[in-house]
Image (cartoon, rainbow, N blue to C red; front, side):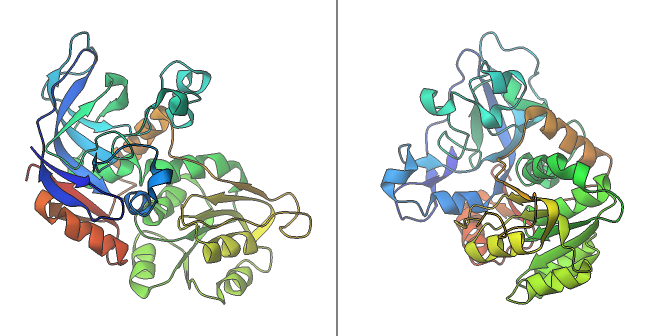
Length: 346
């Protein structure tokens, strides 16, 4: 089968031919209908060898959807021909966190060498994907895999971050979204669907801000050295009650803490290497800073229900599997408006 792999440290993604996966006991084989391209992949491909923690080559793609092609012995709960989305942050299934469906916070994943598909285990940008357990599949039903596969990360990750901050987002509050691309433009829609907060979106380009306005941002601000002052002005000097940084670079983290109000939640979601400065007098009184990761299985089901209700719609660009390296180049250059989706089987 064809697959898109990261084959050597510092190299670019390549389209290669690899053996078809063979389903084993307890496993599910999917014929991939759609797979998402994410900045996390680019981050992984920028790491030095000692930071990787898993061998290469690696088939990329941690956002996956497909049709069940074959079932291993003992598999129950899914049927051949069923359209499903893949829950990506695999865990052990038995620890305290996994027992709550929070496999994104599995307490034994590192110990047991468990890696998400595309981030250590073979990923979804391939014609077929082997899923370790049926519990990592969520039915898509009549949802279009192409338009909804990004929700497995670009929807689930902001949903998880926003859900924890909802108690702060009361009428009259403000929520700031920094970075309105793949995750950020979905976050704006989730905020509009779940809260009465005034949504202020920040990005570095007018086309990204236009997308933010299209999906429901009340205010848009160019993310530059004047952004903090502008957000403070828009919030009457009080700052925002929740701030979501989907970039995570040093300048955006500084902006995130700079626009926070008293008792605000600041969520650093992006992995751009920024570090928040904390301490008395550095951030407003009782502001909290968190670094959430992905989301739970139950939250993925909830995100897909939002899509089914028509309140979340991902802006996608589509590519064939042979065009996947180009999709990564465009993403790295900041030229993907929304989310890039690969169609491995056409």
